[in-house]
Length: 78
Image (cartoon, rainbow, N blue to C red):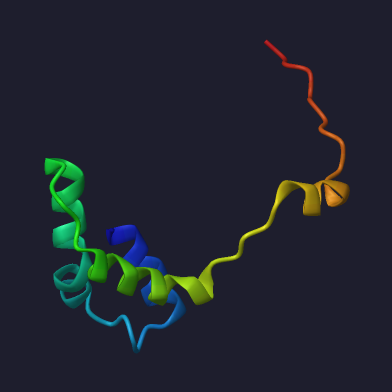
């Protein structure tokens, strides 16, 4: 979650200015859920999804495979 905050802070430093505040809002419960397999707060998770949604770019392979060049493998030198 620290990496997520760092990325969000880079994108919008005035909104995500405090790592401690971000940690209070999201990290503690989500990381606790991951470690202890406890129930996750769906409201908190949906709030995090709402924050992240404008920054997500979803591309499907069939839409971009025409743009990809052929894979080139360099011979290994030992």
